[in-house]
Length: 95
Image (tube, rainbow, N blue to C red; front, side, top):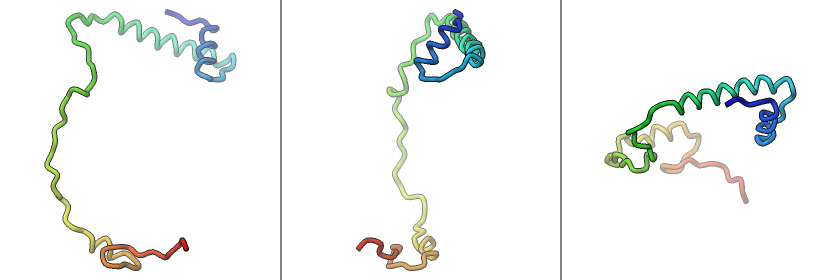
């Protein structure tokens, strides 16, 4: 299948793309090569190949929900300019 310049302009208008006359030829070449690749894919023999329906039927492996990182609270808060227990303290900005 080959697209003519009028079809390229119509596709560009439907895609809400503004193309000038100089860009139509390049766009026509690109679209025709894409359609040629699709035609090439249509020639592949897929008899006996089950269609993929997606990955929704595959069950994901679950892992244990355990803490693997040690408590770094003191290390993190050691850089805080002001703190109250295990929390940062900041100046009040809303009255």
